Image 1: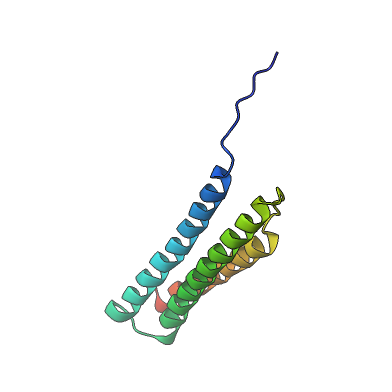
Image 2: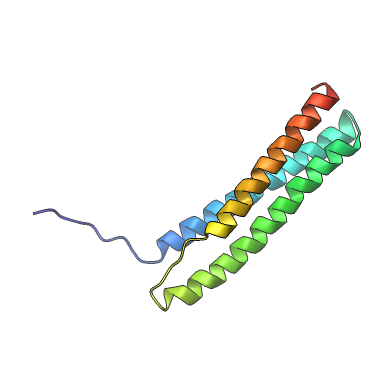
Length: 111
């Protein structure tokens, strides 16, 4: 006989929310480093664009986390939970954009 353990309901939502908050924090840290690079080493427009992109992504993820939390609370009462495919795709594309901007910044600034 296979014994299964029950996990408390609701913890998945908190773990998911925390992971999205870590993503937003990573974007804020990246933007802060890019702003620091702009002001202390080589000021140019590309550095500011990269920092603005990072901060914009952080704001988008923070808003997404809030909306997703409300959606999960509403769906949890109905015992239905849907994947956030659009949000994940948006954050992935934003991360790729940020990575490309940072690479261009490093190439044109002479790293």
